[in-house]
Length: 404
Length: 178
Image (cartoon, rainbow over all chains, first blue to last red; front, side):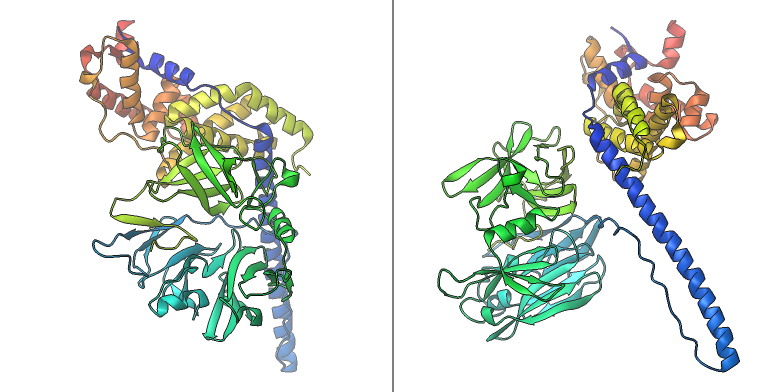
């Protein structure tokens, strides 16, 4: 029996089957690129105009100044593109930390932090990692550090939720001591410079400065306050003080206006639903709500079922398959396991990082190989992005604390 | 509101409906991976959408998409963001059941997949798409001499891996046999 190269290629090609393409999606992607191109062109033109105008103004002013002997007033026009540019794509962030050969987990631990294609030695031992549009954040015993992929720099200290670690105890909220949003540059934490007073700090990793330093008297009693989420410009946190049941427990602090208001389950859900990079659970988009925000659905995971990753919602009476919607497009999310990838039956995964509005990264539950999978919402395709490390390491992803 | 005219969008949709199957098959034999082929085709079609006013007719657009598939596959490999992992060791043809045509196909396919992307692309354009050396050169953006050397190197590698009695007829052999 013989075969030719032509025959073999034709046979393989015919076995490829039809592609799964969505014309609306292709048109949408094309339109979005065209829009981005227009913005860049507009910004470029505005920049050229600005340079010319500044040059002319400077030239005229200098000419006048020479004549008059005065310093020239300079008015710089500020080009303002009509639409904001698309947010940057975030880098995948994780760290493989060596498992101690003896004894229990000493916290914090040193390890190599993988940020996109870069591997960074933190230099100092860390407790947990988080990511912004500009780089990544990690916490040490009671400090917060930021790196854009190069040398880390300290951005905060005396973090309330890590006080116990500094004192040699266990910090139960270490993985939420410092939080970031699924998009943007904001990082938030509570600072306890004085054991009796709490201050909300919000740091902007884009501009490299603190944008909020707000005393929080309501967090000075009880077990203080826990940070819940950053949604857009809103910092959500919950007070643990012992008050009447009717008193508000959750609050929202608006970074732009400096206003702090009580939050409710529905106001939080509305905020989540109006921002991209979130999934909500429900039978329709109109009724879908975020998981774990005081509503009926307490948790959301994706389980490997056949060749698919099926969403399961955890409620008080157990877990069941659920429909989830993407807040950017309001479309139902359907994910497929990477082709040829066979995780243990029933393996479950949860989202730990959004890379852009269309892509997120998932990690498996504990005790399963810590492969990192990335999935695209537009077509439901997932791929194995980073294989699990060797047995002697434990993988740390954003917003998860070290074991122990 | 769409930036492209409705007429352009329907012409583009027609191209996708009529030719995406054939283009997908080309992408698949170039990259040897189903998911990557999907990604590659999607990327090429989106680029075609952006460039649509320049392409005008569907024949020109199809050629543009085919060219984009090949050049993007090569650039992905160059940037190392290509997630395909060619087999480190090519399966030994002697271990395959060479009396079965399917097994012979599989052995040869594995060997083609292990070729460097540029060589594989040249081979696919010449022996799957049946393009001439000049057409292949134009599509790859290189000289005819480069196409000749890429194809010759690819066939040379395949000959080294294929035993003469394996039942695989490579292009020169075909010519002799016919």
